[in-house]
Image (cartoon, rainbow, N blue to C red; front, side, top):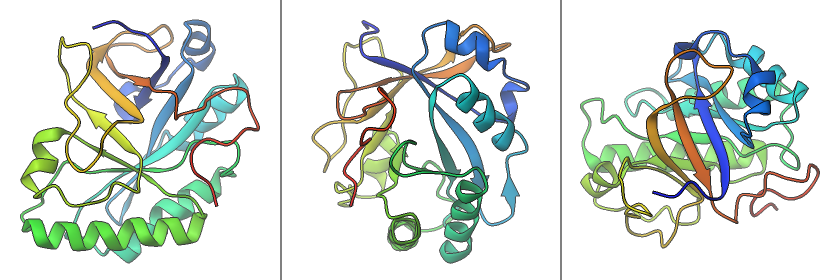
Length: 212
């Protein structure tokens, strides 16, 4: 594949301490940072990573690892609280993302119901549509529910020039193309992403996606 477009990474506590000065110097444009998971977990590196991105002028957003059997109301409260704790701004920061990759023993119908409740609440609390992170096979397994009003962050590791976009989306906003990338400032592997033109990560102060 050809690495053209805006380059990004996503990280969590698994990457340890990140040298954000090194990341910025390597040509990375944006970063997604793990914020929360389920109802009871906040990533211990989230605030530190957010501060590092801000210091070195990297656009950033937080993501929530969705567990469909946990209360979607409490999960919404968790991610909203985490975003507010770092001074999240819908006009300058990337929208929060909901990581959809684990069934947690529930049915597709149960999953879709809980996800719909979660994204609706996050949208209401933060006044921005969250992004959906998923991979084609997982979304196909859900029956391709129509969340197309929410931007797609697509995970697919392929040598092709472009990924397979699952229905009902017609395009992706971010493509996570590798989980074994190497970037200056990070020890070991990290996830690597490319953004298309609908993700505006520069200059600061402009709209990122479709705001209200």
